Image 1 (cartoon, rainbow, N blue to C red):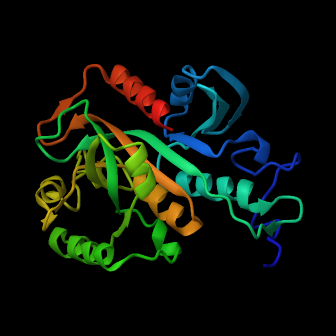
Image 2 (cartoon, rainbow, N blue to C red; image 1 turned 90 degrees about the vertical axis):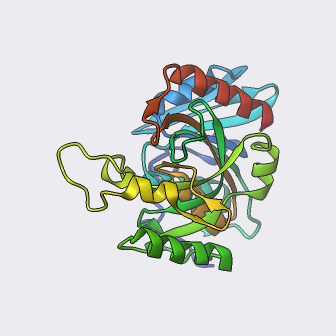
Length: 285
């Protein structure tokens, strides 16, 4: 394969990848990803030691050990646009020779576990639930710029969702890592997660501006195709699943349900719920 140009893969003066500001030696093969930069410190407080720290924009990285296992935790900020930067630069760290700018012939597979928060779309999903996303449904535009392979079931769901919810665009549907669903999320509630490109109108909220899809919340809650229902929504998971498929990594998204949008309930002990989920995931990775 040809060399990757300086304009396509931008490196800092020390040879690190541009946004994450990391070198290959700074990360482990197991990555915990969080949206909120402050949550990196919540994760790494459980580490036995921290060998490396880097702060660059919203991308904060801590690498250390938990019970003798090397783990990296990185924040991405909000949205699939940041997830795209995160995935491409992580992949470059392990699958591109940064000195020659040539892709390596032997590819490394990372395990990437997103720990996030979400709002439930079904009345019977209790606040405080740990939910693992079996499928992600992307309402964002990121995959319009990639050629994402979807199987027949995923493509069928995408077309059905557009038709029944009357979306002015085609969503994408992609399944998470079978391996990580089994090893990390085995006893959690399995759900199908909608990833939205915003927090307000794309999630059915209206403050001072009327939304284009005023019944979106109800339509998402009622939607089903056979036994496929939508369980929750947030703003990153579909990007994780799509890019992990394209780049050949394993990814799973686990959410602490902090709100039930149908019941209009929000967790009173949100920090404790998140910390409990973090501890559970660390024990399993």
